Image (cartoon, rainbow, N blue to C red; front, side):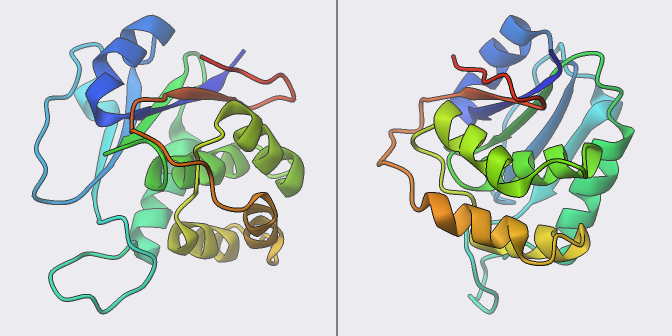
Length: 177
């Protein structure tokens, strides 16, 4: 089963080793530093500097931009899918679930948006995908509002402590931790 592993920062090494990931997307604020797990190939690590905000014009904070989403889409399409892809942000609740949805649709554009988002909710009751990333991803992947509507349909996730990684399957099989 090819899958996307979504994780908070504190568990990326554990999740990479447990699931055999060798590729990773990091969505972190520029001021946050961390060490890439040794099992992740340096040339297959995409580091995107952004804050977890859903609107632009917030002073020193960096809102998700079209260039970030383009990088996610390009990286996803170059993922060889022989091993799971690890995607993480600070807590694994907002930016990384949004990037996981964008990734899944970039590699499998025939996927039904609502079915995918419902798999996300089943895998993680805590996920609240970043609305700005979702909006930009919807536009760039030509989803015609279906991704935005699907994410709105599942609503906000439950409160989280940032310690709940999960597996988003690219197929209808649901992966849980």
